[in-house]
Image (cartoon, rainbow over all chains, first blue to last red; front, side):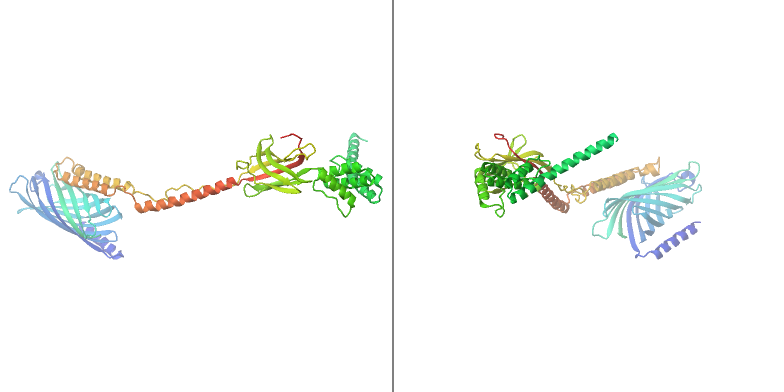
Length: 218
Length: 351
């Protein structure tokens, strides 16, 4: 099912690229952020209840053509227990996104999202198929723009015994495009909430703030 | 015979009698002239006196009346009735001070007597067109003042109640003088609607001097068309002179709403879960960016538009002044219609 969806997305993107009369443009984003993870899924068989935090670095590349965007992103960091304990986990996130702009201020996107918490012994892996909606609100035209993006998982899967429940989240921030400069700066706050299925078996929330530099894609 | 037929017959008889009387005045004049030419002076005098004796409705017109008086005076002169001849000529001079007997028809003793009577009979008259339309200041109503001999006269225009309006002429009249009136009062305003009296009076009234004469003038104003004022300047064509407040407030709203969304995001998407204070820092930053946007896009004057509008306003004011000036000129040159009544002889001592 997921394979079929992925193929469909790629076909849609390829068709859009083929139809696009303008020359596609590339945009790259580099992120540096800090993440807080609050996991309360020990009862469900997860790695364990923990409060973790740590820096994360990431990047994303986007191909933009005729109002469509195909993007591929990856971020990674090492989280430590908030209480200075010895618990450590690597956080790895990756996603593929196909987006379209039906309106100048609205972007709709879909795509798979993978998040993994890796320890020496076990890897907790979440896979979502997300539907996202992003609204851009210019503060100063072509220079300063705020945005709010919300998403919800169309389907979710986790390698926990209990399985994945509802997964949703949001991000809001501001993008500054200095005049006569080829890059933009973005400050954002993100909040994800992933519930584990079962009888009150817990959840996992992820908070992040990030500062990003975006090159190209104007 | 029915009553209707009787009434119709009587009407026809009355109309026929009136027609025959009007006809007979000119026929009597013709017969009198023929009798004069045949040297039948007694018959001529009788016929001419009868032609002059008719009432004005069925009588002779002024031109024929002047002709009849001339022939009657000549007839009386040749009959040896000099006083009667003088009286006839005197009536003739009073009737028309400019009338002169034809020297090809009448012998010198007749014309000489006429000149003698004319010099002794000082008469003045005024002739005006029956209807005159004029634009005040620009055009003139004209009246010809006639005098049988050199006379000093004053021509005045007054309201019907005697209130003076304007003096039009004061000076001598040897034969005739053309007096013009531009439709204005002494104050320079167009004459109001109403009845006016154009009066010609001798400057030095004497018992045997000419009597004043006058004509009643019915004056009616016809307001001229005036131009409409140019339409008031609005936007457009005026350009906005300041930027709108809308973008500034939209920027502020975008920043504040997004900042609030950042702060509220955990409550919306992870209800009941704890969240760090990091969101407040980001929310504040976004909110401050909204304030920056507000001040960056606050209303400011658009100098180019201000200059363009000043030029438009100047042009509009010039147009308005031009229209006002044109309207004022049109109102100053109001159109008057002057209808003249018959000339009458003023009573002695009347104002």
